[in-house]
Every structure is written in C-alpha cells, then in structure tokens.
Image 1 (cartoon, rainbow, N blue to C red):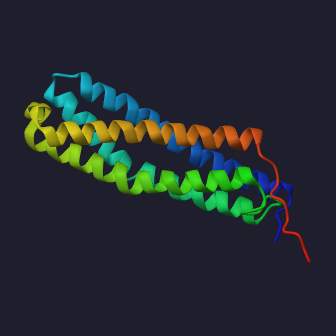
Image 2: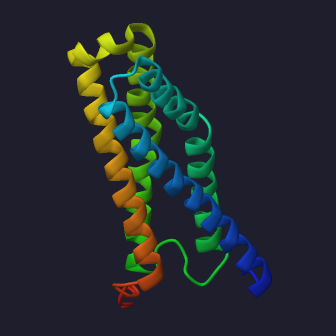
Image 3: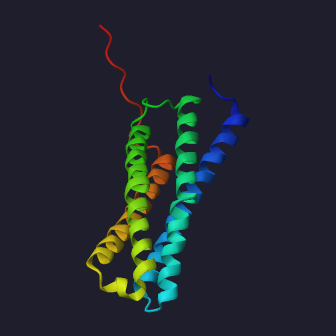
Length: 169
C-alpha cells in the first residue's frame, strides 16, 4: 500500500510534529539541567527536577512513540522503504539508540535525580550518587539532542543513496 500525496503530507506533518516536540523537550531538559546545576535555591532545584520527571514520563514518551510509529509508517507506505536507502538505515540505528537512551537512561537518571533532590534538597549537591546521576542525565540530554539533530539533517540531505540490489545469478 502506497499513500497518495495528501495523506502522505498529513503523515509527514504528524511525524515532524512529534519530532519537534521531542527535540523541544530535550531543549527544555537542557535548560532545566543547567538551571539545577547553577542554583543554590532548594525550591528551584526541586522544581527543575520535578519538571524533568513530569516531562520524562509524559511528553518524552509520547513524542518518542509517535515519531517512531509515524516514521515506520512513512517508510512502509512510501517509496522509501525500511531498508532501501542507507540514510534510512542510519536513522533507524540512531532511532533505536535514541529510544533506548530515552526509555532506559533518561527515565532512570531523571527518576533518581528527582528522588534524591526531593528527599535531600540542597544536601543532594553533596551526594556522589546525585552528582553522578546529574552528570549522566546531562550527557544523555546532549546525546539525545545530537542524535535528533543528526536524524533531522540526514532526513533533509538524504546522503549515501540507495543500497545496491543483490546480484541475481
């Protein structure tokens, strides 16, 4: 089944909306992470990690699932296919890594920093576990942003072309 132009454009629009939400949420995570790292105010510290926790359990999950589902549908229902082009395979690999990072790493690190900050307040800043989680969360945010940015650029430029078809005997 191949989509005609109008349904394809609607599906592409929905896909781009989910990707924009996910990328925008990562920008918010970055701002909140920097704010939390720079503050000496317990209310701001707790508020930043509470906000990240709420976003991690809502918009990050929903937008990640939405972008994957619409991306797969676009590949299957258009001429691009799932494995015909190297740039699509590259995006699929980045997507798997990004989803793993979002659902496993980001969720765990956000939950742990949120829990420690909520329980210990400013004393969390002296906790090696908190400092480690905060650093892992920050690195995860950067990796997510780089990965999403790379997927966007690859989608626009479509480098590497079509895979060679296997030689038939």
